[in-house]
Image (cartoon, rainbow, N blue to C red):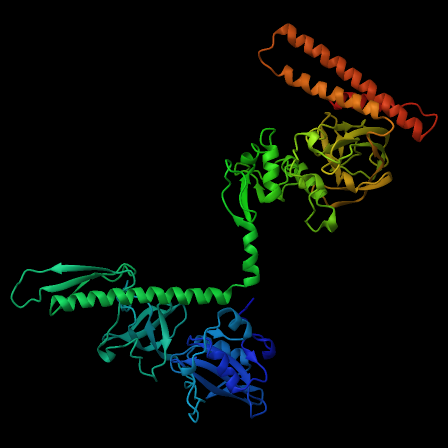
Amino acid sequence: PIFFAFLKCPSFSSWFHKRMSRHEAEDMLKRVHEDGAFLVRESESHHDAYAISFRAEGKIKHCRIKMEGRLFTIGTAQFESLSELVSYYERHPLYRKMKLRYAINEEVLRMIGQAPDEESVYQPGAFVYQEPNPFNDSKVITVRAMYDYHAARDDELSFCKHAIITNVEKHDGGWWRGDYAGKSRLWFPSNYVEEIDVSEPSSKEEQPLGALQKGSIDISGCLLEQVHVAGARGEQPFRFRVVPTADNNVKAFEVAAESQMDAAEWIRSIEQAAQDLVTQEGRRRQQQRTLRIAMELSDLVVYCRSVPFDGEKMQGRYYEMSSFPENKVERFIGKKYASSFARYNFRQLSRIYPKGTRVDSSNYDPQGIWNCGSQLVALNYQTPDRPMQLNEGKFAVNGRCGYILQPDCMRDMMYDPMDLRSLRNMEPMTLTIRIIGARNLVKVGRGMPSPFVEVELSGQEIDSQNKYKTATKSDNGLNPMWNEDIVFDVNNPDLALVRFCVQDEDVFGEPNFLGQACFPLRSTRSGYRSITLRNAYSEELELATLLVHFDSRNAKGDDEDLYSSIQELRATITRLNSEMTDATLGQGKRENLSEELRATQTRLFEVQNDRQARHQARVTPGRSSTTSRSSQSQRSSRY
């Protein structure tokens, strides 16, 4: 990339060239056909001397820069550094009307280099080193108007575009004073004019009429209309009207010609000049954009091209990205479209953001959107709620750099986040967590907390139904002990997150947040673990920890028969719950379904306790069952 920055050390500047001869500089400038292209180089024949090579009036010219002590001298001007010299002549003409505009180096030539212009070099024997414009530090200057201005007060100056204002005095506050059209020492805005060098006469291109020219108008986009005038004596009947559209301050005016042929020639010339101006302006803007754009960065934009989402086609080009508000994406993460949306994210990027009605900066649950493969899920980071804590937990891996790989199951074209049968080569997991105890739990305000622990699993829809709550330990925030076991059956461990939330139960039975911790399931290891608790913003709480024991094993191991029974019972419970939501059910049918649901739940608890007893017998011989509190908490909080 090219940056127009002027550094103290010239050897690192984009316009400075060390050990470059005059002929080499001319070879580079021949390939840029714009006036204002320049470079600075060391002198060939003098030590501690430099030269600036530039293009002006279609020719390549050079000016010497001498070192006098610590100052750089060019003509009669002196500067503290080459950077200061270049910066000054970017704002003021260096030679006649030419200001420094384009810094030239090899990288710029590779990007915008043109065919060499051999006519821009002086013939051998010509004197190519020029004297710069005299350095004028006087406050009285001459300026040229860049726009039309109509006075709003009696002490202000009115002028048209390209008007020459003389005897200008600079004043602070953005207003200057000057003389124009027989009026003296009137005020005008300084941002409507530009300074010019009166030592050089105006070029024929800008002042074709010389002293007779009082101004000009912008003809780009103007309208030309022929005017028919009755043949009155003394009037020229061949006229046309010019209606400027680019400058609202200039009124339409009429031009008369000697013959109809002359009028038609005038109209053709004006239209051709306007077209040439548009072409030249487009070329100039394109060149400026090329100079400012880092092509390496520009080439990357193809991978995030923002396009509207087409729900009918669903699939687009791989380099296109679509954005969705949360209320729109909810449709695509349901059972009907989840698989199609997952295939969309398999090929393209999607960005999800909160809906505009969340004026309180609350957040939506990102888990279902992650399950469908969305790569950019935006949340309100200023809100310390459960979705943000899940987000911090999900991106805790990979050095917390903010980037994680999608699991292998999402890179399968048959993946459906709502169908477990699409999980090929995925082994379900049984996770047993023993909540042993905690320490140094501090509540807001006075008194000791009465803590309890909530443990939940967030992942694929069938896994996210699991949430457990321990008993409450009254008035013990120093070292509460629970020793309660919790069992999770996880069908898709790659997407699962385990979240611990420690709450304080107040005198009214309401929970109050004390601390939390969240981890990807694949990041946990079996054994005893001391978990550092965090506040709502996921910042570590000093000394507050939770002691737990993890035991991860294949769900289809020694207890495969019990695991299959548990999955069948859970599927039955899901079906019964769905049938009971039917509003057309009669009272008798609803009571039968309710009784069947209670029986199925009871059977599920018995099978779960049987599996847990087998596990405990293998781990600690002689211990036949889990604590009664564990069974009760599972029974009361799971369904």
